[in-house]
Image 1: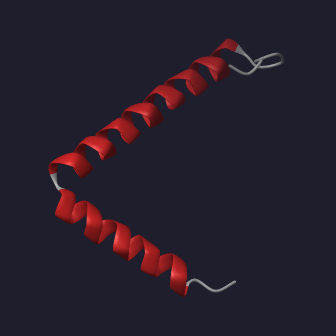
Image 2: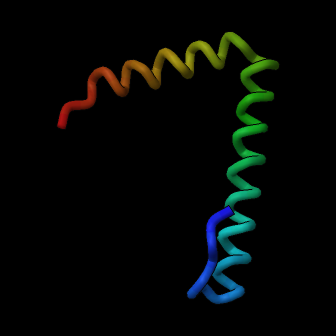
Image 3: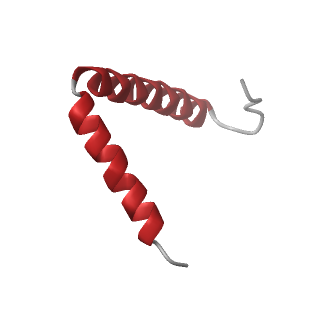
Length: 56
């Protein structure tokens, strides 16, 4: 874990809660992909199309 020097306890608590939320979100997405593989594939295809059509 990174050093939290210079951060208030409120900030470190918020960062800890945010990290836990993001971990749980990734777990939920992985579970959804296992339960609904067709939707997962469609979502991946759409995301790839968005990346392919994005121009700087």
